[in-house]
Length: 403
Ligand SMILES: Nc1ncnc2c1ncn2[C@@H]1O[C@H](COP(=O)(O)OP(=O)(O)O)[C@@H](O)[C@H]1O
Ligand SMILES: CC(=O)OP(=O)(O)O
Ligand SMILES: [Mg+2]
Image (cartoon, rainbow, N blue to C red; front, top):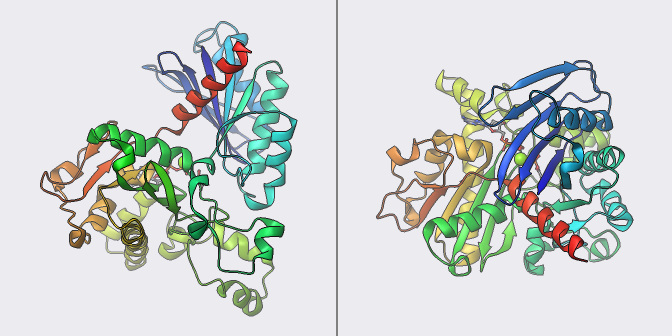
């Protein structure tokens, strides 16, 4: 059965087409710069060179249409007809308190996602555009949503409540939700398999370090605490997001700089983090390069970034009263041996012994980067949010076909 996985952003749309019974990726790609002139569609079929097509793609509906054209293309396509797609799974960042698992999309689900626009303004509106675009192009195909927040619905009240008047939770559901749940879920299961131990017995800290970044404390196979909050802004320092800061900075800045609330929100989400501190880039590769050339701002940005991750690891080891393994994943976590080294070198107190040779290995497979004697294991586990989305979609579609 062919399942299409969609991760729609405001100006981009990533896709992967799976043959799910064998979990094979038949094709994948992305559309960038939707709504701008010269949008770019990049399409890749296993073992073949990438195909790039530049055209004007004004909205998500057109973007999906182009993707479907690519998938059925005479030369670079992998399907003879779009009716060969039997289900579409979407990544949705915010599911609030309504969803603790993946669901089939219906009117009610769409309404709930819309209600959460305020809580994930960068993500949820874009996901809705993706869902509507698929509906317009494939009206008869069942669609599902897989939420970033779902995995974290197991957090106890003690970790998800903010210490502010209760009325704000009652009226507006202001609380910690946590994100990247699909990734934390996937890598924790892979880590348990790799270690050959039951997940339920492990105390894990998974560090999803990509553009957005979050750490999760996982106990008993469940999310116990996580660094992102009501929105994906809390916690670690990120590419362009500030992460934790004294909330008083917000009214103070509004006052002193004569900014609006929206401007401050945008500053904290889009113009902070690595980008602001380094003054160079939100991309860790460029920050490390500048640091190696002696740039002091890049060094400060790198040190702050690594320090925050270390601090969360320390906090979560205490929160769980123990730690078996730390997992690094996502763009930076999987690729930056320099960052992993900076973090792990200062965790010897916990019994982390980094093996530098293992740390510098690159591989798409899960691997250990500590010595055999290390008391706490540190693993690099490449994430695969799309595969989990495809699996969940398959389960839901099969159930639908049975009824
Ligand atoms: N070799 C590398 N070294 C350091 N950072 C890298 C490397 N390759 C990719 N990255 C980082 O990964 C980030 C993207 O991570 P990713 O998980 O794909 O993020 P997202 O899904 O949020 O777009 C980039 O911003 C880049 O900084
Ligand atoms: C929730 C979140 O931050 O997602 P991303 O890392 O894809 O921006
Ligand atoms: Mg990501």
